[in-house]
Length: 252
Ligand code: FER
Image 1 (cartoon, rainbow, N blue to C red):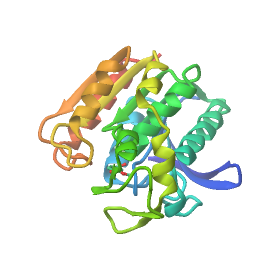
Image 2 (cartoon, protein in one colour):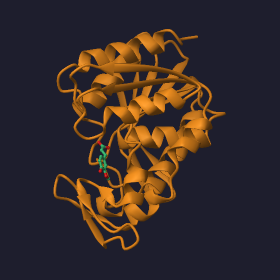
Image 3 (cartoon, rainbow, N blue to C red):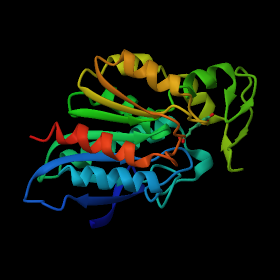
Image 4 (cartoon, rainbow, N blue to C red):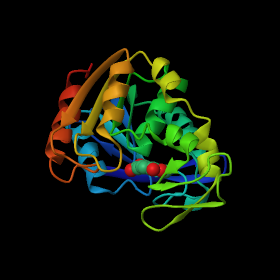
């Protein structure tokens, strides 16, 4: 891959970014921003595979580590969906300033897929399409019910700390922020093209989240991957194929 690594500043926070150009790059092309999931980063196997699929379709891919993740600034325990959302807005603005980039698309996995849905609503006029992959749309409702990360809590008395599946602690503010988010309103605010991919044996985000979200979008293609889990350990090639095919059909 022809990769450039650099930093995007977001209000004093350094976001680690990598731009991968398509092989046949000839001065201009569309660009897809790619966001990883909760506890994830831009070098995960499924994120790299999606990046390669984007490049193969003739699009540039801009991967970014979100606040408190990968090699970006910020502590994991301080991250919230608001911080990820404002990170995404900044990255979209950065991409809009790239002379070579024509149409802009936004893609994200899981919590990054939820961020994609939220940023898609706020920047619907700047984005040609969205690709939420196994989007974690149950997080806000889970936060309102007191059900996050496989543990339960009183949603009116959110604990100081929540503990993630990998043992890392997260401040209660994560849940307080998540409680305010309304995914369906965000879905309704984006009327462009959407590709939603979800494994039907997802152990972390129920496949029903993807099915319900896809149904609600005005223009969405849903690709279910039979037997696959949250990070596509069994059929990553089917995810790659769906992304490549969907983008190729949209190349100007
Ligand atoms: C949760 C389940 C899944 C949760 C987050 C996720 C914060 C996100 C997973 C991912 O982004 O891969 O209960 O709570």
